Amino acid sequence: MLESGIVVAFAVGLLVLCIIGKIASLPIKLVWKFITNSIFGAFLLCIVNLFGLGIKITIFKALVAGVFGIPGVIAIVIFNYL
Image 1 (cartoon, one colour):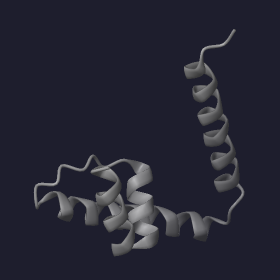
Image 2 (cartoon, helix red, strand yellow):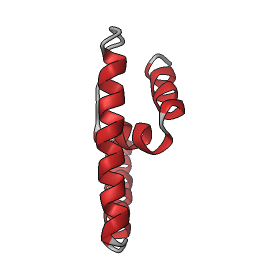
Image 3 (cartoon, helix red, strand yellow):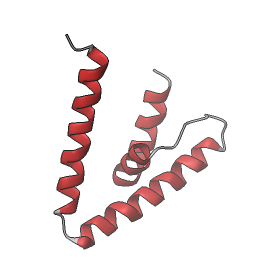
């Protein structure tokens, strides 16, 4: 019988592969927009961290903050303290 951790890891890996496949099929202009938004999101999270919140910056969090802007940063801060 498989452990639940293995099943979860498999599901996450499958999801990541699907996302990578989807991104690979997008036009390069849209991919460039995601990259620049992620950099902007990471910059916003760095500014938030200057206030001592201690949020770990990951690619996913930077992308969420870049795509959704300030509401995305607020959501990340809220989820960080749940």
